[in-house]
Length: 138
Length: 138
DNA sequence: TTTCTTGCAAAACATTTGCAAATCG
DNA sequence: CGATTTGCAAATGTTTTGCAAGAAA
Image (cartoon, rainbow over all chains, first blue to last red; front, side):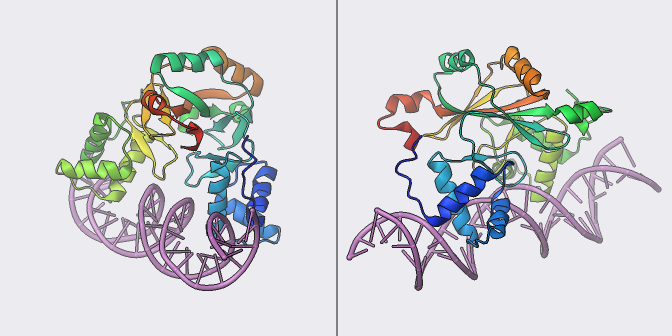
């Protein structure tokens, strides 16, 4: 963690708290809406600016889950995202990536892995139960 | 593979070939440029339309590597992307994801994994050799 | 005071859409 | 022929930028 050396401003603190409090993975627009609900009215530019700053500082994660906008995640400990191709819902899983596998990658490619960004696609439990027909075409 | 049932048009075929021939991971704009170099002039809308069709058909992969635009990949067999945080280069690695790990995910979450989308971030071999100072801030 | 950040509006991109004309099966 | 796709241009949605005014160290 590099929580020292962070240049906090009111805006950054509030935005950080909103993302940390979120149970989903809000987009910049979602964050704007939640800020407004809390009585804040920051400029769009400020929100993007703050999000970028917080991501660069390692306090937030930026996710690209395939739907237009970037999404932000307040959980910075290593975790996976499971995206259901049928209902679109994102689950999180705290299952560690096997070290042996990362070591193999390093040995075969010379690439030093510092961070993983993993999205597993498929069917969540409830969609699998209700599934009829070919899930891949959903 | 579902190469049957594909509705081929001239545009789709040419666009598919351009992406398959690419050694990098071109964006829609890169693809437009290469089409122009080959003497074609398809509309932007057509290129996006064709790319979406080919991705949905399972013939191309769409990647979101964190820089604004989607990138397209003609290699559809399961593989990893290694992104160097210093020079930005993307490498591919054909190292399989351990089945045991995917099974563990399934058992712990009930999620049925159909496809993986994995980007490992870190330092490529050449950047690591030339690295001085703290690579994370690069 | 000196530097970095915010607010605002405009600009820059990436992508989608609507509709008439062309193409495919 | 009937269904689908293309081309074009305009619309949409996201993110960045420039610059004057304001806040932080």
